[in-house]
Image (cartoon, rainbow, N blue to C red):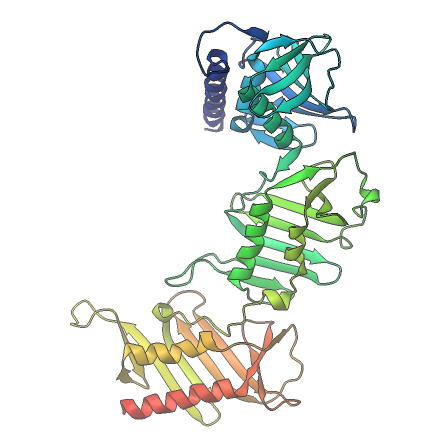
Length: 448
């Protein structure tokens, strides 16, 4: 099965190259077919083995060698066939508009090279790009200078820009399921996406280090969106060593972000010193030092408390079977059940202490959970005070039972300590619980 998939990929890739090549074979400056011109290379696209870009100023050459399913750069970057097809076609069918007399031809620092299986190599030193006119090029080993048309010139210019930047293609930012953040200042923060969405909602995120709590989905989504908008890494003007830009530190001493996607891909970026509007970085999949837009630092500036969802509890009405509230000497039982097929009333029916209540009344009480905000969150219980109340929630789906425990706070009578989901301890205003109890009292009196 895998071999068949590789064959399909290779055939599709070849087709892309052939289509792009045919376009450049037939077109001329006016988009007309068939007019004779000055061919610098007409070897085509089928037997290309590598494409390279060299910068003489920093003495670096990036070579992208053809593999079975993609092109791999000598820096570790990966490009799919469709990302390079138009570049290869432009160079494989390279023709000039005219030969020019330019004794004072000034080459830029860039040159591009296309190599074939038979060892043939076509290298061009690039001159100025003139928008709407074209680009001056000089083939390797010759003193001749040619003007190539504006369409090829734009493609070569785009090739230089694109291949001197590295797209973030090793991780699918639309399918992220886990995030790891670390800074020496804030420590380790681990988050994962829920296995299933909430009722009538989308997937949500959980923090499980340094404490267990629901993450604010909007905050996490903003982190992922930031990376999608950055989109690529920039190459440095000259080769940089990690020790020159704050990237020589050991694991545990250097700020980093790791993303995990649905395809079991894992990608880590390590961040070093700032450089203008960028930050020096290295990644788990590339060999060299690069630059990334400084907006990446926004992701690491968030503390676990800032990422934590401020909502006390997400009460999913369709999923909750029973909710038992105990507060000091009082007890209330909210329940819901789905109507049987033979009942006249469809959907859910709602009850308080066994007496029927309207859906509006039930949802008004349930809304208390999402409207109640936590004021602080910690890893450990500061002091075990007497339990003042509990809320036991029984659900139709996992987790099937959840208990919220309210304890007095010795140093501040206006707060309640709340224990929920294991290790996390949060604090809410006492008056919030008192408002819930008051609402339950009123609803009970109306229904009796």
